[in-house]
Length: 255
Image (cartoon, rainbow, N blue to C red; front, side, top):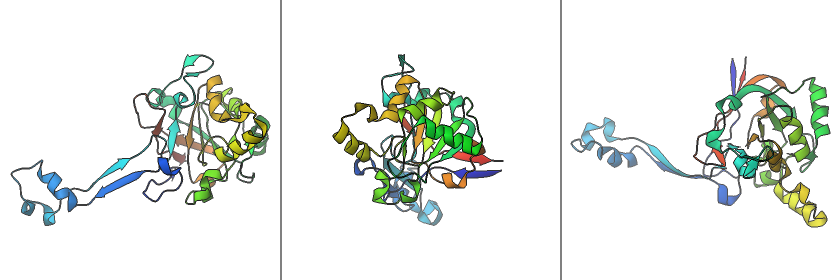
């Protein structure tokens, strides 16, 4: 069995989020943690610790959408599936988060390409695969090679509402992308909207959750190491009460 980590590394120099969403991690080493540890053992002294050292620990300030995470339907809209209350990340069924993986490689498409249902159908014909309920569909957008560069936020193609609905109508409830957003890069969408004022293109892949509730993961990595199908994906999110998203460490399992 081979395990492939699909999550990005979270660190203080990460540039795969806008500045306001980047993590801040404060590290306390074994020397710095010594005094904290001794507060739990008031009768002990430094001499009672191995080499006079205590525990290391970290403090972190994160947004729920920092790093690799899973969006819940609540992130997209208060309702999902044509009127139901949208579920939050702590309400996502565990059964959604482990299943057969399918990778659709669109990395050859120009940045900002709006993927439509026909693009998904064509790719599925190319790999000779038929979508099944609870498949976890991963989109290789072309953005991942730029994940350590400021340009990452405008790289990759994105899923339109029609393409997303094509998947969810076939029983897909969890998807993912190696780009910053499931949608096309937002600055590119804004540029198009400023010219056309076509409101249907605004956050359309996310807003597809209004039609049928689903979750998606963003900022995946290593999708280029996966086959088109024939693998499992485990992607259980951290439970944050009422949360619009939760951090996740997705893993692909290849037998």
